[in-house]
Structure formats: C-alpha cells, structure tokens
Amino acid sequence: MTTIYMSRSQVLDPNSKASTGLTISAAPGEDMMQACVPFGGSAPSVIKPNKDILGGKGLGLQEMSSIGIDVPPGFTLTTPLCQVFDRHGDLPPALWAEVDKAIARVEKDLGRKFGDATNPLLFSCRSGAKISMPGMMDTVLNVGLTKETVEGLAKATNNRRFAYDSFRRLLDMFGDVVLGIPHEDFEEKLEALKEKVVVLDDVDLSTEHLEELCQSYYKVYETHGKSFPQDATEQVRACIKAVFGSWNSERAIKYREINQITSLLGTACNIQAMVFGNLGP
Image (cartoon, rainbow, N blue to C red; front, side):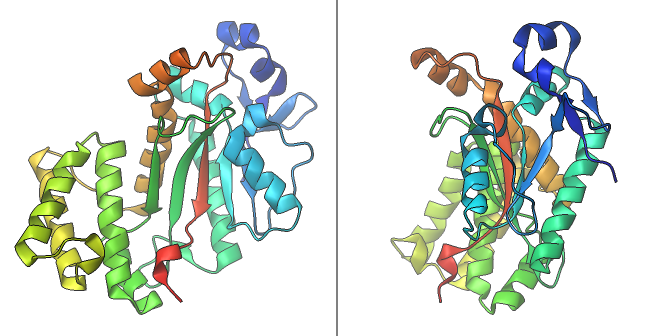
C-alpha cells in the first residue's frame, strides 16, 4: 500500500492552491510531504515537524515522542486535508486507504484489533489547528464501540460498568458531533434515568442502569431518523469528516473573527489509541 503525499509548495503558497487545487500523489519527491503522519509506538520521528501542517496537538505528539515519552500511538491527518474536505465534502479514496494503513500499524503496535469483538482497539478523534481554539471544534472519544465490541471491552477489562459507561459516552458524542442530534436530547434521557432510580450523580448509576441508558440513547437516534453505525471503520471515517467539517462551523468562524485568527490552513485531525483514566487500577 502506497504512502500519500501533498505538494509542499502548494500548501505553503495560498495563491497557488487557490487556483489549482491541492495536489495529492503517491509519488514522493523533494516538493512532496506526507498527508498522514504517524506518531507513537513504531512510528519514526519526524525531522523538524511543522506546526502549520501538523497543528498544535500534532506537533506536541511528535515532540513528546521524539524525547522518549510513551505516547499512545496514532496518526495525524494534516491541516491541508481540511481544505480538501472543505472543497469536496470528502477525502480521496487513496487517503482513506492511508487511514486504514495507519490503523493497521497501531493494531500491530498494541496487539489489538479495531472493531474486534473480543479485545477491541478504540480511538479518539480530535481536532487541532496551529492556534488553539478551545471548545470551537469537535472531538469524539471511544470510537469503535458497537453492540458487539462493548461486550468484548467488558470481558477484556473485567469491568462491564466501565464498558457501558464508555459506550453511552460514544453514543452521545457521535450523535451530537457527527449526526447533529442535539446533546440536550441525550441529557434529558440521562436526567430522567437518574430521577427514576433516585441518584444524583452519574457515578452512582449501576451497570444495569447504564445498559438501560444506552437503549434509551438508541431511541433518541430513532426519534431523529438516524442510526448509529455498528461498523468501526464507518465510525472513524464519519468522525474524521466531522472534525474537518467543524473548521467551518458557525462557532469556529465567529471565534476566529473575534480573535483575529487568520492565515491558517485549517485544522488537523488526530486519531489516537484510547487510554482510560477512568478504568481504575
């Protein structure tokens, strides 16, 4: 499988790409740079990483990896791809193949499979422009959980409650960020359940309560004529599109206007293996 490159001169010359479109090629060369940049695990260090191209988070991940910090592996889809998505509403097939290749590397590094029903690998999908724009663009966590993989996560961690807590968070975030279902609709279901079982805090919900909540969240999808994808690859691709699409959301545009942020290429998209601080010892 080939590595996909972009024209460096076009990326760094806004006048060039505005008129001709961004060149994407499978042929490396002096003027070409990678569109999908791995980090952590078995990934090679990037020499002189460029914040314009990798974004702030992507740069930080490369720098931490280069000094030996054990960064959970993943990959950065670079900021110029945000322009490609904005122009076409999608990424080229060759780039999606590159994403599959990058996921396979992480699978090999961690010994888990994305979408596996026994010990699933999960990802976070985060935005990251050159200049931080807190809360303005989108993030989705626990990508890869489905009706099948949530059972695998429960068995692999020996913690069923944790698995369903992670799943209900994905159902909420995916519905809100990717499909445009109002977050408040999920919150209403959560608050109704807490009132029904007489608890004040989310942490007091039992495993059975969280399983019931997930079923309630599925009904939210149905109410809006939407469905939650039970395929991990479909999930991650939809999340990547949502992150790139959030660059030109109304709130992000207004934030850049208010803070006089100009001349950015767009946001990068960082896909990274999940690490769970809420799993406990």
